[in-house]
Figure 1 (cartoon, helix red, strand yellow):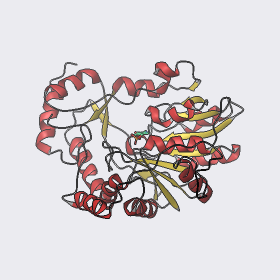
Figure 2: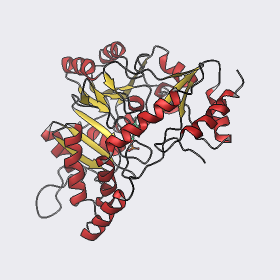
Figure 3: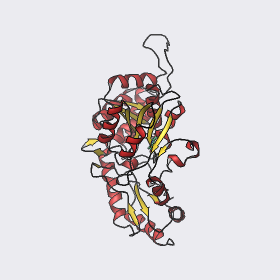
Figure 4: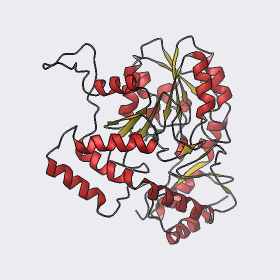
Length: 364
Ligand SMILES: *Cc1c(COP(=O)(O)O)cnc(C)c1O
């Protein structure tokens, strides 16, 4: 493979040095100085009062579903165009997911459809809006809707680490936001996540639930069920070094985006940029007119380039075939025509030219 979709990118020896420090401290455990530093620096960088480092972004969402004590009979509103991890933890606990189509101007949750979805069920507990491909959802508008109905707003900001919305970090303004530090995201701990919130009670509860809901007594005492969700000190060292280089990652991703845009044929249209924020350009995503994205994926793969269709919308997933959904056709069209281009930080203009030549040879 000449170019993966979104490979990890290490900053010289910095990650390795912090991992060595973690080894020297002998905190080869799900706690330690690297975890503490990662949580402290992430909260500061992303403008939240507190952060909890978790084994994955999915786990951070799972902890929120536990903190809300989601039960059968509850419902959650969620973006239809997303990765299944946004909703799987909530559905697993018995909630009915209600999916909401995307706004064509942002590819994130359509606010007016969300308003209708909120009225459609008597027990909506949370609204989980995804920041798609590094672009923030319209947090203020969604927060207003949620506030009026006593619904918790969660931003699945797994893909938008480092993005901003009206000058604020992604997810800020929600009850909680979740970042992913998975290997394919803009920064990585090899696998991990961050739960961000300004609510100290929520943070304390999630921290407790991530430690099997152990009570603060000398013996193992449990009043409720938790899980084992805390990030290890060794991966936290990788994540910490990556976090300290986030600005360079953002600069590189924007460079990759700009270089792609300078080369795209006129039948490939880049994802729109919302006027309310600055995306992190995690992936360069386009829609194709008159060309088949699956043929593009195959042609690129033949030349050593990894690419992919967009997320398959949740309302098309067999596992959610009975779920209610508020649809406008936007997600269907994006799935039918969208293509995620290889977007690694090290991707060179020369390789892009090679990939573009493969795309230009596609049949109309
Ligand atoms: C990556 C991702 C997640 C899950 O994060 P993991 O760290 O891989 O568990 C959740 N939601 C979205 C939208 C994602 O892209």
